Image (cartoon, rainbow, N blue to C red; front, side, top):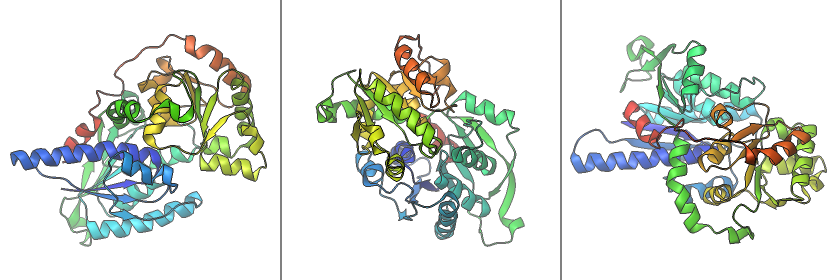
Length: 388
């Protein structure tokens, strides 16, 4: 069975590492027992994240097989980026003719991969299906909704995601090419109508957190940054809604500077945020913060594990804060990961300076609980069983 995986952005590398590790374990069992069908995984890297610390080092640290194809498509507006990816991915699909295309999350790479596959009647499996912010102004929301609509296999990380899909009328009829069919043959002879399948497989990022947590502690010392256990706050800031709205960005950074007077704030600065500050001649807004270049995955896990509190607009880091049982303040007006809020680990504050400071002063004293709402740490194995 041939599986073609589309990746392009930092969170997707983490998820793909987990699935690729499960693929290797599966193939080893097939070889040892002579039972089952091996999986031939073809990895296509669109190039959406091109910074070395946001791309190359992930493949090294996480032991991801090097991409079979690197498309090098980055630093473009949404339409141009998605269009060029669509054209390039279609070409690779015609060359490889996979049985399944696997896409992750909600980026332009996700949508381009799903569209290219759907138009060639290759079944699409969407990891993190069913997530919703209910904010149509987010590019990510557009990407995830459209990808869900044309996917064959909807791989949900939580029951909330399943419920979201069902409220929207899923499953729909999804056209799917018969395995081994010829995509160049007349349409009626190579496709059939297939009901979309919704499955709660758990969260592959939880798999990753469990697998790499101890490794991060062993390999990475807080001395690297002159930090102590629970002696700092960690912040990430990259969402378009915050970086492109200069007033939101100003208010968030003002709150961070005030908090930093009492607790050091570590800020691995995303290229988009850095460029926005330069363009606005506002680089002084990060004075008083400990600014780092983007850090590799293990370093980021180490910083998260030992932080007193995390402030972020990243969906993935909201979850990882929960996985590591670190209180989280989300610098957005909504979240896809409602479970983290309901369980008391996460507080939504948007960009209001007073609300950010208030949350910082109170969230560590809130009652919080831990459940298995993100699965048992075997999401990658679960999803492979469904496509193989």
